[in-house]
Length: 414
Image (cartoon, rainbow, N blue to C red):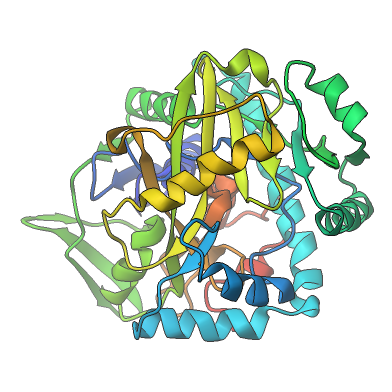
């Protein structure tokens, strides 16, 4: 069995460690932080086979331009001469077409369905109680245009074998009787699920430590040495690590790790915000997505978690309160009885989603180094796709047939 070094301790890195350990490999995980506050913790906890449409779509270009002039909008690209952003934007424009959307749908669906099954299996294992609930997700809309778009997507989803149903306001009320609604309707993504990401991450870390997997926090990689088309060792300050196989699973920090190897991992960090309000869970039992506002609301840990926005910029520690206010102000427009207050800045979580330009993750071996696997670029679906990515990474290293085809996720794709 192989000695494997994973760089990155988020959901993708830890899921890879879990399945690699199960396959009998010797695993070490190093992370630049303490593994307790990555993007894997503060997300909406949604498992979303329904999300088979990549970020790069024809309509997203014009909509994104309009949103750039609204400080409370759900999507924002900070204008910059940053070469990485320019390269990302050019590829995004190239891929934002109907052909790409059609081509991406099946591999994204297969990856999502695999991940959902793995989470269902994992939830039955001792010590893995992470509040997995299979009630689906409701995508609410207020305008006829959004309703038409969602109905069209539901039709495409059903063609892919997904359980999706268009609902009237009365149908919605039957499913959410305690929630006052001001909507034209919703699509019930019955194929979806949700869980508590905090509990999942804690359970994974606890299991891996008990199993003897070496989890090393606060170990920022500073140098990577290579020889003969292979990685030979990884250095972190005064420490060095050697392995047979290496995995870059550093989320939004993956491009910086790639630079140490002279390889380009094209992705941008998409900042998202979330906050929790307790004692509201009885109002909503099924998670909600607000179509026009791009806001997610999930029952979680005795309350509701509100999340949203996609802010493409360099990694930074700024909190844009206007964007948080945009999330808060959108909620009563759909649910008049639900009036969250703007949280204090200290109570706002933010994280960086590693967003590839074409909306597909990178999963596979590097063409440049034959003992390097790249597993990143999952955008807003990192948690949702984490389990499947971990299994695929394990299968690649074990040199066994992968559970699904992975050609669409090749790290060196054009």
